[in-house]
Image (tube, rainbow over all chains, first blue to last red; front, side, top):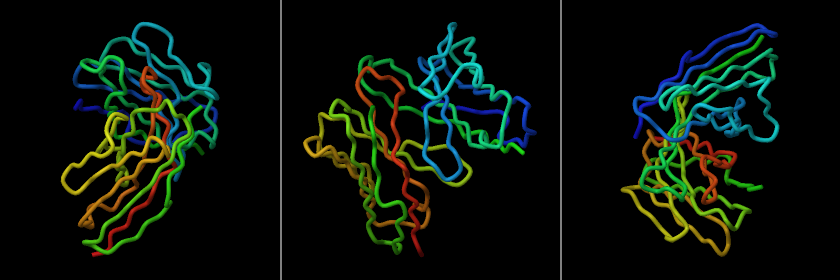
Amino acid sequence: SAVISQKPSRDICQRGTSLTIQCQVDSQVTMMFWYRQQPGQSLTLIATANQGSEATYESGFVIDKFPISRPNLTFSTLTVSNMSPEDSSIYLCSVEDLEGLAFFGNEQFFGPGTRLTVL
Amino acid sequence: GENVEQHPSTLSVQEGDSAVIKCTYSDSASNYFPWYKQELGKGPQLIIDIRSNVGEKKDQRIAVTLNKTAKHFSLHITETQPEDSAVYFCAASRETSYGKLTFGQGTILTVHP
């Protein structure tokens, strides 16, 4: 499986500011995703990071609040903009490589997460 | 859309006992069902998965069963050890819906030595 790293691992931010989270994979992967895990809760998909084009957002998430970049097949960033305390969560990137199982659900691997606290 | 219900929310067992976590899903088109283990301060780790063309899969002390007719699947951990203590999440996705995993609410498993 791929080795996934995220930066920063945690941060404490003031409301109204923005934070950019980086996700780096040690090999090229087809798909990269961003999830949010609110305190004590399950994981919710924010968006699919598309290489070279705009991300695909899930219902309830918008580009102005969570701009995403994916300049190549190993790197993506998620920005949490104009933060409020409700944005305090763990933000996780994940990857899925479709090689070999092109039209079937494939294993998805997660990074260690970024723990964000907004004051 | 898909909805995944997971039970129980907490599970406490003695070391050596078995643990069973159950999930039900709503979308009959779902055909990939992974299980993740999340330890404190870490990201979820894929521990086992099952696809709709099989009914059971085993990997050492871990097994997963799938009943497509009833739309439920279960995680079985035998001979539990304290290091099995973690939060376990089930998930479901549909063929051609890459990355669209819908997660259950999670089960906090505590194994007492």
